[in-house]
Image (tube, helix red, strand yellow):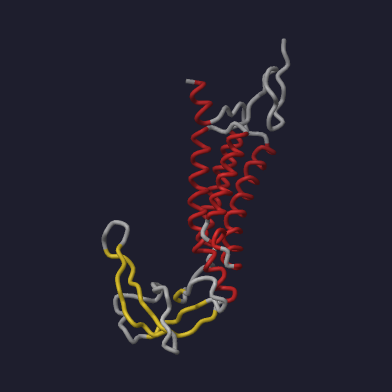
Length: 222
């Protein structure tokens, strides 16, 4: 049972509080991975590079963090939890990155609603209302807008939308509230905590036949 517990959750061979620099190492690993995932998505959306903007680079960063935790001997359960959080962050980052681009260089204009539809939700019930819109010149936008589009919206109504003048990200309805990256904060914090926990619990007292890791102390023989 001890072997199984070590394999699943990590050895955690310390008494009392864990070594401070191990905690810092785990937090930095999670913070670096989080910054790389979000930064890649924002850079890709800003420059119009689909491989970065679509979250593929973020998934690579999450995989790199997973490999690092595996290399230091973290427990499999904690490695899996951290990998799952990294994937979730990588999938959430692209929409937030689009919001960053539109917030920085987007232009707000009025658009006329041409039709209103209703998308299905994940459980098969009623979803968001989706509006097809066109600009003042009569040119229809390729994407449908859901921000500002509701049950009372009718064709001919006017919606305020924000679009990228360089055309690298799709337009959106004008949103109010916190900045676009605030929605990613819980995922980033959870990733950092999971990474730190995995690294801390990978700490072990090295035996004479083992290579010390994380600077753990060698146990002298009798």
